[in-house]
Length: 377
Image (tube, rainbow, N blue to C red; front, side, top):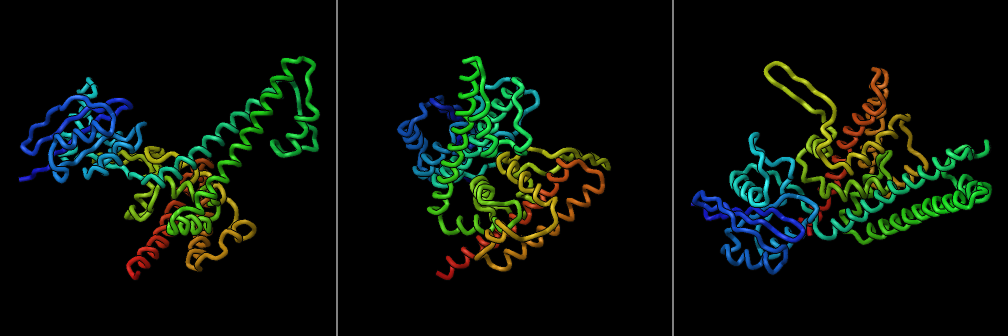
């Protein structure tokens, strides 16, 4: 007879609602404890030997601190994907106590899907990459505010400035755009200062990312370098993929990675009827964004030169061959879909989905090499 006690935790910033599913079938609530390490330690000591405990809680804004605390105490713990928790159609009451009971019951039944939990160093890199992504979004907003302010006041750059946000464009704004009203001039200065601040912020964060890569484990550095052999996958994109996904070998096939990204089609099948729609968008949004951005590069004919040739220096020939195969396959795919009359957003989504397959193949090959080296050592 099983002696495992399954613990469901509804974790919040200050409190944790606790429920336990006993081996004999009883599922009961244990009340609410403070979200503090000492309280968690007392709970574990109360419930019995750590070898007989298995705990779970939903992924959320509290992060993985509770997971790390429980595993440090020797308790097996999993973080559950909230969107994949079974929900009864007629259940209209939601409380912390009920959520904890449902987690414990479903966990014992094996109906829950855990998410990948990064270690502390990996999460730090992911936070840094996401901070840079936030800075880019803030920069876009700051630029938008400044450009629309100039547009409202009829300020147009001269014909010699062909592209916005270049050094020449910013020099024109700072030196030649003036307003008679002091309030308008103060507004202009504030918008310009914010644009400059965002540029400095992004530069600072990218420098921190470069430094973090240099201090990363050799396997992670090797995967990041190898992924940059692909067209459209520069350093920031490669780091984002590794930071968001972790070890790509945890996916049994590239199709699983595509599903994780949310770039696979919705499907509703019943009887002989099959209906497919837009992509699910239920996966990692950060991964999906950088992959779609990279996919735009494959609208151009296959070519290796400039920055891409520099990124491929020092890589194994089999990695370069995979990257070249990706260029031909994905460019051909882009042309065929364009010839079929598909819209560009649909095309780059389809190309990006296949690009994930090449990313998986390259990363798995590098990770396998390190596993072999560890076994030999």
